[in-house]
Length: 302
Image 1 (cartoon, rainbow, N blue to C red):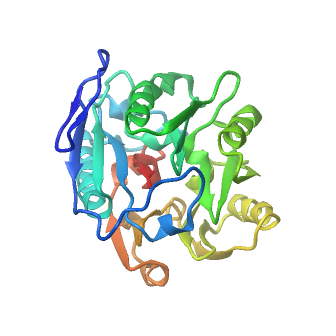
Image 2 (image 1 turned 120 degrees about the vertical axis):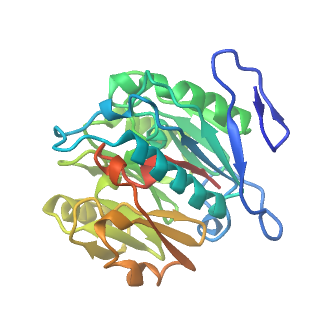
């Protein structure tokens, strides 16, 4: 397979060609990736973002509740294209994996892998219908030169349950991630503290909280989210920005930029500006219908 614009080649019979969209060039010298968490990754431009195109079957994606209003496929693709356009400004290269109609949830590519430094852990998604999504992601991560580990049965792990915070990995024990999945995460990243957090409601850990930098989380004002923060505080002291709207706490930090979901309003934009050089609103309303957030739609590789 050939990847455009980067001189990359990989032999792969079972996957369609990948397409790399090149954004601005990295300014200055790009540091070499080393295994493990690097604080500088919060400030430097990441090398890659992996995304996956929206399939024709996206309206059949798994949802926790029956939708009162269906997903608009055309609008979802427009929003996804805008999301990619924003990422082009924030990373060196955006790698677009092809859509696969066999996997309606495949745009939520974050769930298929966890990456830190030069190490990647390919997950075993909690929803059995999604496990085939990892194949093309595994091959891509290997092609990029990462050291790749995998979660094996009976382990279950969704990337949406894993959050990098100040050199630690917070991991939600949810309906999609079990104890064996948590152990697989700890084994793949032994130099990092892994903090299990019970997720009693909702889909994932990052459904209700995310990291904006400077020891600060964005957290929903719900009892479930507050209980999760209480557990996290036992491992490290973090500040919190509270948001009152369910879903609004999932923001994406890429380098010195915070991307937040404009669908829920702009009430917290001024607070996000305290933690980043740039703050960008992006509307992904059709992905919210599928229980997705901004972090769900990419794998960021520092």
